[in-house]
Image 1 (tube, rainbow, N blue to C red):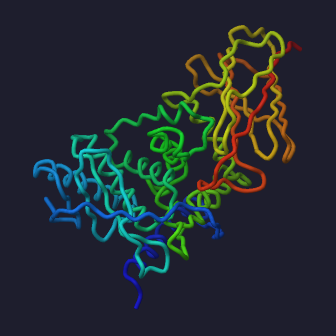
Image 2: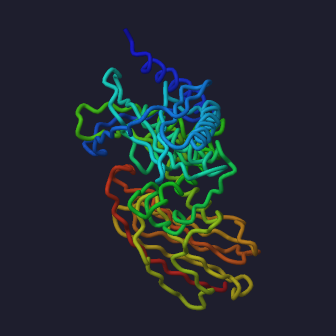
Length: 409
């Protein structure tokens, strides 16, 4: 007899595959077994009976004063209804425990009956929150627990970033402050070691992918883990292969036009995030080069990270041209662009520097600078040449040198 939960997961995955592919995306990922992954850790839920349970959904809130528990329950009910619309794989039943600390979700036990990795999960919710902050927090933890239940192998960085992106759709009243993420543009997208709040802020990447390519809100995010079932043979480490990035890499092929790749999506995001508020930290912000000037990277750039150099065009002479020569360390694959910005900082156009396959040097001369108030040089590290980006890896940052110059024909 088949496991009902497994059957539901299969139907849910198949449905999302159709929704994701219906916008011209191939929902597929190659399953490669890897020895990396995160340790298997189980937590015992706090004790205590239910303080409040929903009459409409299989939700129970434990602990806290009755008024606080009812407030959390209401927030969870609203998040549940939004989750249905977003395609979140909501659990058969859900338990949340009110605490006086930061909210989080955890795995209580493995589902031993399922053919693929699945688990029983729960959440700890911060009872000190109220209003929109509570709605956002409840949605994020409900979606994180739901994701862990069907994809317990997912790395913590991707889990927090994706569940936060979904929560912003469910509770748009909550402000989306990506300051921590934008202050470290050289780091990998889902690196949980950077600083508290970094991977939550990285939700802007998954929101960018969802806004750009999903047929319906949230579907690119939910499809990314729906189409990545894993099967871990032991209890030491969850094997996250394929992961959400494997799914996006396969699904977004040709998404930006015939022949476009996942690397094109990463480069497009690196340029787009320069226009987000707050702006990413610039590695250099310099005046128009009257003579050739070489700039070195203050920090190395990890795979999926980016470097930014702003050049003020105020001192440019009429018809003057702008040239860049970029050099970087071996093994990394950098894509370099010059983006023309108007007086308000908005993009006018962009041009990519040319580089030979597997080269460590790129060159570009921009002739038409009409209307440009500034130029933004963007270097996107789109990953290593020999292997794709894996969120479970330890990423090696790569340094770069950028020579900028100008000339009048």
